[in-house]
Image (cartoon, rainbow over all chains, first blue to last red; front, side, top):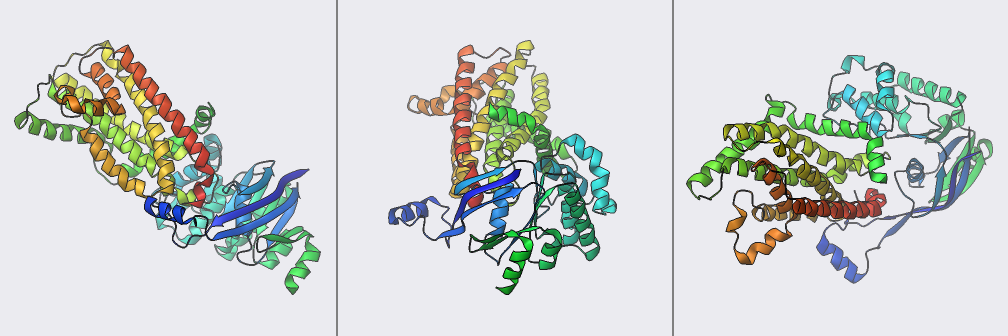
Length: 241
Length: 257
């Protein structure tokens, strides 16, 4: 079963040095006809499919379009052209804690962030203890998160985002934060999800992690697919380049 | 329809967003939410003092008349200004997580509405103190308020969309608001407006809501049917247009914030 279908997806960004956001400049540019000046192609005609239970790793150098692709899959970006079909729920671990409100406490943020991610209120009440214990932040439950360290921040974010078992888990370099103990805990949780049949998409520069977790690889270069297929073939090619 | 269905589906998130706004507004202040009550009363008292001594208008129960005007205009002012910034200020979040974007302007209009509800006791107080006509028909004030809420929501969606593309809107709009505050009969009676400016009041949608609101509160009667019909028409057109505009552009917001 195809759980994700990506068909001829392209993504263009308008990289204006000075972004046009006032009317006068807009009109000046419009007259000069260079509104679309500096068009940047982040993804160029990308097509692939992901089967259920696939463990897909996306590799490539900085600026290859990996994060853009993940954000398209997570529904944050709408592609400039092409179609994306996702059959199932997606839990995006893209910069966890993005929805936190600095002024609010850990408890309030669990509810706010959880609801933003689409959980129900009852679910959150039920799993509240689990979330706070996994993040090891029970002592700081009523502290505004602006006083948190970056590690605590990431732990709370990861804990909320993985409280539910999704159909597809998207992981973007998220494991780079936190100490090794928490790192191991995260990996363990991801491994459990793999056992439960969750489809996983990982972006990482950590080749050891990719080798451990993934079965398939997608290699992006300058927004195009350079190679797509089983891990073993591609990983040796990628290492050589 | 889709709009209403989704609003219902995401009601808990909306409630959470609204309560966040309110919590943040009064966090660390001792009187907290009482300020919602005290603020309009103090402003009203000051304005009433000035206008009943310096310039006298021939208005029955001037304090109540004034308070109605202030409550309605403050609601419009606060909710639309707040909603305009909703997308920009939540940009960080929208760039990283998929959320229904219109929940943000909506939640902000709703939190202004909650603030307005907190000021209602002040209104009650003034009704009692000034011994105004109070009857069961007074309670019909809720109808113009509800219509006003829909209107503000529509305006908020339009402004939120425009502000993403043109940041100048934020400054332009505050100038426009101060103009609008004089074009709305908040502290003066409609009758003093000279003939040649009558059109301004006719074109100002807030006037209609305010007139209906005053009929309920100051006169204690059910608002004119024609007037309510006009308000309904204004609200429906605004929300429809706002929703269409927002829907058309929402997918491109992330590229501009």
